[in-house]
Image (cartoon, rainbow, N blue to C red):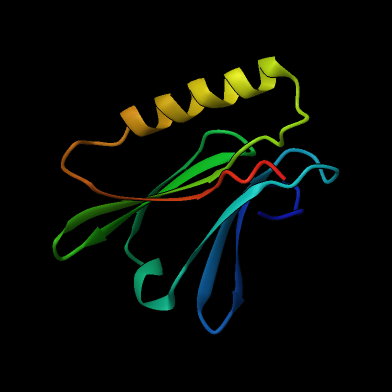
Length: 110
């Protein structure tokens, strides 16, 4: 999670590139850090929301999609939780079946 606002990418040191998305500085956004050895192989970034984003990387073995997910807290309104679940379902279904998939998720609900 990140508190940066906007849909951007920036170098954060030692060749690591951070892709992030956050709509509001009062609420944490989502981010994926890509190692220097892989950053030039990033073929797509899908910023679904400030809670869900995907980075697709072209590797020798095929495409690898990393999905970063930050679930709503337990006190959030039900409609926000429902919207999150629908967005997560959509994001997973949008990933090609041939891709390797890694889901990094924070579901602890604080």
